Image 1 (cartoon, rainbow, N blue to C red):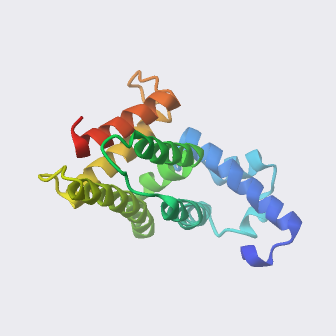
Image 2 (cartoon, rainbow, N blue to C red):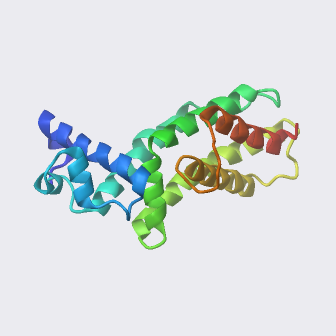
Length: 204
């Protein structure tokens, strides 16, 4: 297999095409419903081309998940400032908008990782890294609210876990057909999640 660092321009283009096809198919069909042949066909590449970059479909998903986590998700937290006051609705809206857009564009990865996490430890580890990131961010806002005289009876870590997991499940269910009959637009989803988060801390 070739590493990303040694790829030619054509090689990068081939690899990106395979990854793009996988993201789309994982979002539509899930990991188990997508075959390696589906991915190479959608990318317009041969199986031989696939094996130049990945050992199998799981290796491809793991590479996508690690890249998403460390190159996209983690850096996004570096620019987040905590809410200035209960009236700082802009904080919640901005953070949730960034979250929603980020995960909308990568929902196939999240769906596939979720499907493998129960039986593949390395995917459980990646999933937990995603979750810890969300938990830590929410917990930090609980601590800020406490400094401001609010949320005295709210445990930062448990509340962080509750809200982060709520966000995760709401996002996964809302962004693909679920059979629940929910028609969730981006603006409604962002308003709903940011309101729940803010009111949990400030109660108004």
